[in-house]
Amino acid sequence: MKKNLLIGGCAALVLVALSAFGLWHTQGDASYHMDPDLAQFGVSYTVEPTDIESKIVSVSIELTPDKLSPDRMFYLDIGDVEASEPVCTDADGTEIALNNLGSAWEIGPVSEDCESVVFQYDVKLGENTGVDFQVDGDLYEDLLAFQGKKVLMMPLFDSNNLTHMEKYISSVSFQLAGGSDWNAIIPFAPANSSEKSFQLERPTWYDYYDLINSSYCFGSFEPLNLSSGGENAVFYLDSAIRESAELNDLSMVISFYNYYTGVFGSNLDKPVVLLRTNEDGESTILSGVGGQSAAISLSMYTPDACQTMSRTLYHAFFDSKVHARNLHYQPNEWLYRGLGDRYVNASAEALPQELKDLYGIQVQDDLNARYMKYLFISLKDPVMASLSSDMEGSMAAGQEDFYFNVKVPLILETIESFTSQKQENALLHYLMEQPQRQDVNISRLMQDLLGDNEEMVRAYFSGTSFIPNYWNLSAQNWSAEDTVNLLAGYEDTLSTLFDQQYVLYPYDPVFLIKTDRLNQEIEERDLSFATPEVEQLVKDYSETLYLLLMQNALRADLCGIDDPGAAGVKTELNSQENGQIWADYVASVGMEELV
Image 1 (spheres, rainbow, N blue to C red):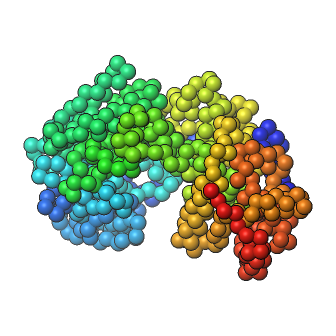
Image 2 (image 1 turned 90 degrees about the vertical axis):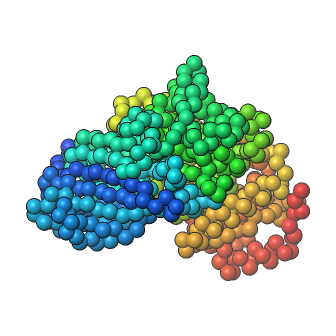
Image 3 (image 1 turned 180 degrees about the vertical axis):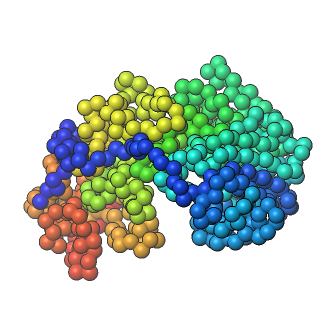
């Protein structure tokens, strides 16, 4: 029995269901009414390095109420801050009750005549991020660097009020205590000046996004004027590495920067600080990237470090040029994350060959490999094929990996294939041309960019139609061993990710039985794994992939299952009884020796 799946122009047949269901999302502009149960207040942050040897900074958050809430409570979101046990007092030094809610601190109730609340804690910088050779921020006698969200807790709002925080926060300010001889490169202040503070009146969500994501650097910095496209771009170099900075590292930065200048069509007008490495001599200091500033160690010892540098520069460009809040939330993560991955990979491809060779850079998961994984997984598991933006936030880890790392890149390349004849990087430039500090209407975006092709792309996203080979990709010159190894590795990755969350996803070893016997079975049993159109697409793309999917159809047929690509078949094939049937069959016919 063939799977009832469509491809290419036939996708229009599914539009009635899709138009009712909806895949493109835009937050509504319904009228907003202030919540009378929330306080209105000002926020003041003070950061002070207190123990340089231990890399400790002390943080003080002063909340100054303009209007107390009925319950006289305040809430601070812990977010990514790994802090010591806090203390909280009022203006008179009287201790205020604290309650740890797990992801937030509940403060109060405060007195009815409360003038201010001071919430204090310590943060240790220079700690490993969980990724080898990366640390979060750092502190030395001559340098303090950190990302806002790793040090500064922000007021907590629910989703209804988060987008209107200016209604409740009358002002937000920041200042550094100590370090009087340092210059500062921080958000909302002149770059590389002695000004170590800023204040914003009625800060919006966009202001707070930059406040917590951007970098905060204090120390001594040397401006580097790099020319790109006839314009000057200003980087700042940590003075400690003025004499030791590697020219190859600077060449890598310039190459990435020039690539993104070409993609975005203009230079970056926000500062990027190139820091020393951590004192271990190997670890990259990550100190944030947002729409106001970015900071990262210059030295790149591994291909992963090069990728981190490229990703930092990409987000410095994107977050300073595209200001649409709804791109940062579900169900639009596919667009924000997908574009980042697409251009970071492309920036590596665009590097001069001598830099690729010097740093050992090879783009492992190119479009061809992604398409191979997409066809193999989708044609065996319709649940994976149907993953779409509506499911963001509710996927298991294995589903997220397939969705963000395999399916979404192909969707974006499909959009690019439809729009590139009119304009290169059309999707990115469309986003940059939208009114700033407003949500993007995703449905209108897709219609404007794709026109009549929008229907097909929606079908590809929903899984009711397979993505055609628009790019004339081919894996025919891959050895059978290379194809099997790629798919076996990805099957193992998915199985591991599902297992970590105790989600049932049986691991299927990927191998080929004797191909002469398999071809005989295909003919005699009239085996099929999809529509003739899809099967021909697969066969034209990769003979080995075609045989692997036919082998899965044979396995299903041996177990009495009509449709090898139906929902739940993967689990059914791995039952104890069916597993034994397949094992016995494989033992009787033998496996192909791959070369």
